[in-house]
Image (cartoon, rainbow, N blue to C red):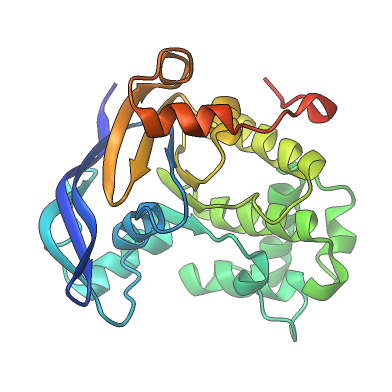
Length: 265
């Protein structure tokens, strides 16, 4: 399998405080990888570094991030934006941040598509958008496109944000705790839909989560982060059933039972 993302010795600081300490991580084409850890472990900081999202006081102090043979830390801002808009997509924890509450969902899908292809007619944009929503198993997408974001449930809005992110057929989807604010049944549905998208499109997924159960359900491989470092990494089933690190063992012991929502295979 061809290497898609290669992070080598990445270190990031907030002010003078190191938050990511010499992290190396590889993701192959079509792979689903979960970066698991508690609050403050540095996992979301890594995701933001890949996406080029900068925060005040946060600085990359060492390392490389190579995506599809392009060193993301060496290219200019314009090139980085082009990659983020086409080959790398991002889904946030809070789907409300993805949408403008004063515009219909459909108008925002149209705006998203026409920004990338100004010649694309509105009718075609809406047809493409409805198809994308249908792939996320959302019923009556034509009606949904006429609604405003506040008229959708949290689960519907998150599935809509994933559908929008997938419109450009990205090679890599970055997902920052996309199910953590949702109820357990909706969480299970979205994880199942992400697995189907991965299978049908070949899009690799790098997901950040604090929940080892999410990793068990979704991921081919997993890395466990603690205090800015990866303390364990490998095949998901191997890490789950034969953990070597004490923090990994603690995460596994705290895994919630999900019998009421048997996550989709």
